[in-house]
Image 1 (spheres, one colour):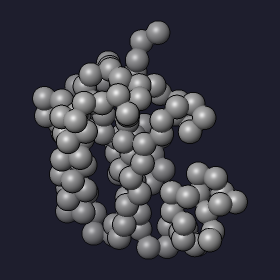
Image 2: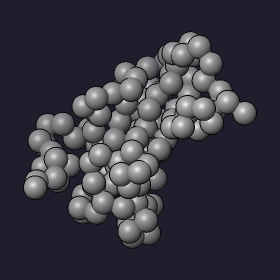
Image 3: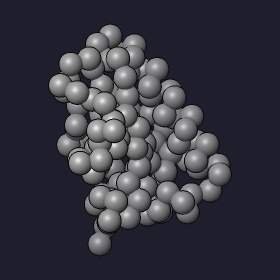
Image 4: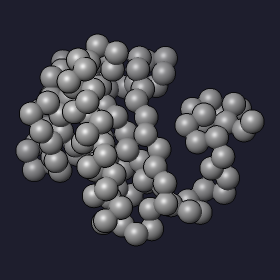
Length: 123
């Protein structure tokens, strides 16, 4: 089976370097939701090299700054990586979500990423 992230159309890539690239999520949670992926096909974040992890982090910071310049309504971000089917991973090529958040985009955002298990979000 072909990996959809290994065969991205060149015109969908927003930014990148020799190890990683960034593009907009095809099914965004919020406007400007981005994905950052290694160019090397690897399914599990914990199998990335230190160089790939550093490159993903550097691109994450660059894209955060770019999104803040593009959209002054952004007031926060969620950053996440699903590892394994039981954690919700559906495309088995590492991908980091950079999800811009805006004040009022949901009634009570308390708990943030803890919401992956809804009854555990509130504490």
